[in-house]
Structures are given as structure tokens and as C-alpha cells.
Length: 380
Ligand SMILES: [Zn+2]
Image 1 (cartoon, rainbow, N blue to C red):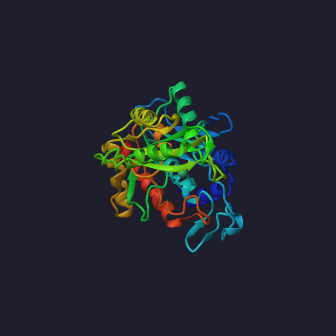
Image 2: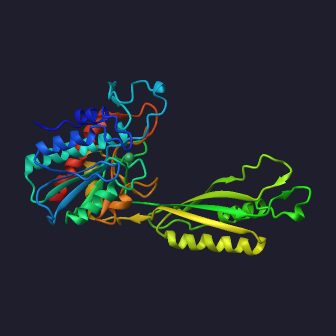
Image 3: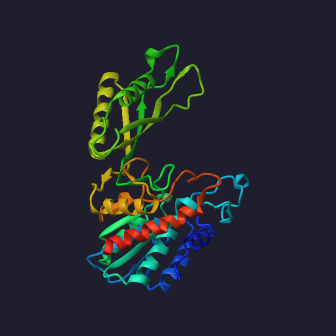
């Protein structure tokens, strides 16, 4: 009997797996996959639970992997939900619940497709599911832990599909072949506090900070590359927290977030930021501290066999040809790309992280069909 991705989604949504709580989701998947002949290993690290499931021989030259997460973001105001966030109620063809689109239905669809595929065809190769319980949190012990463990165990995927929602409005319209990098810079300008009536006795950090932020925000990082939009830099806060109108503050802080394409690396950007800081220091005589935090480098799986296979499969089922895109925020594909070629394809993501998050039941079934075709095509 064919596996029902809607039933699997319902069961998963009923597990209250807000990061980093496992909530029974991975235990259930391990049972389900184990019963179908997958070798299941819990790869827990720190507070995070992860599941690695493999059908077929370890290290096979054709090892297709799916990656996804069962953790969900907090529900927010529970009273604002039309249906309780862990009810998985189905009304008028929509399944409601936190994680219903992001991304328990994605996990359910690839689990169902994988189970049916290995059961029906016994492929010459391996099918791998690497599922984490921490994608929405700090993601240090999630997919990274799974990949570390795989390296140690000589477990490998030769291609990987991340099942995150990728379609903005219409099922099938977009896949992600790369992502922009993301980094944040924190600045503190140090001046000398003083009376605003005697500014010559103080060193006001605010004008230099304003000039520095203007200098950064007005700079064109690039105008886009073959597969990426232009990189962006956003000043997200400038703070002094000064309640007095007659005091020049001693210091001012600001934060800048950069989303960058493959024309840059974080190392180049940090060097550029430092040069801007140095010029401001020289011009204004203030001391400026800068700290940076890199969330991920940009990456690209250039259009090729994997993206062509996914594109074909999506078009067969939905009639829509997915646009290869590199837009949006970060995902665990930024870790998987160090391991093997990776492409992301999943549902319409409109209600992700919202109150009344919901998924069209028909889309869950379509997604299973698409994933089934991808498996069939990969092992053909
Ligand atoms: Zn997600």
C-alpha cells in the first residue's frame, strides 16, 4: 500500500517540536522508516536531536539524500490561531498547524516517496534521509552535526535535495540552486562625554557614526552576477540610549547586515568594512571597534544534472517549470553544499512562521509525486 504523506504530515504536526524540543517527531519517523528497511541512527548533539536514515549500502556511488527539519518556530499568540497550532485540523482542503508548510509536509512527502520507492523498486544505490531537530534555532548541532557524523562514519550523499518551501505563490514555480551569504557587523564609536553647551571639551561619537553608516549604505557592492541579484547592505540599528538633551554621549553603537552574492566572500567584505572604519577614524579622530559575525558564505550549485532532473520532475507533475533562483534567506543547504551538489525544492511558503500556518493538502500529494519522480530519475 502506498505511503500517505498527508497522514504522515498530520502525525508530525501533532508533535509539539518547537526548537530544540524533539516532541516525538524523530522517534515517529525512525519507527516509520525502520519498518521500511531503513537503517536509522539518532545523531544527537548538545540539546539537539537528529535522525540519519539510510536504505541500501553505505558509501554506494549513487546515494541520493533528502535533508529537512522537524523543529518549528514558536506559535506566538496561541489564541490568535483559528485552529490550535498542533491540531493538524484539515478544513476545506487545508491542513493547519505550526510547521505544516515549514517543513513537516516536506519531510512527510520525502519520507513517503523514499519508502515507496525502495519498497517498489529496490534500487541499485542508497536513499538517505538526514533530518534535523534544529534548523530554526542556532543550527550548530543540527545538519552540521549530521554532516560531521557522516564524515566520521564514511557515510556520503552523492546528491541532495533540501525540502524547504521554495515557491513564493504557485506550486512548482521556483527551486533554489544557491543562496546569498549573510553577515552582520557591529560598530561602536567611542568619543568623550561632555556638556552639550561646551562641545569643544567633548568628542561627539554621533556625527562620525552617521558619516560611517552613510558611507556604507551609499556604497554599491555590485550590480548582480549571472545567478544572483545585487548584494545588499542594510543599517539595522543606530543606538546611543541617551535620555539627556544636554549631554554628548561617550559612545554610539550601530549594526549592519549584509546579504552578499558570489562576487564576494565574507573575508573580502570584512576587509572593506575595516578600510571604511579606518578612514572614518583618520578623518574624525574617534576610536571605532568593529565585530563581525558570518552566518554563511554565498554558494551556488551551477545549473546541471541535478537541477535539470528536479526541473523535469516538477514540470511533469505541476505543468510549471521552476525558475532556478538564489533569493531568500539562509537554509541548511549552506552546510550541505560542502558535502555534495544540493538543490532546494518544496512547497509554497506563504504562511511560514505565521499564525494559522497551513498547507494545501493537494500540494502535499503533488510534492510526494515530484520527489518520487526525482528518485526514479536519479536511479534510472
Ligand atoms: Zn524551514
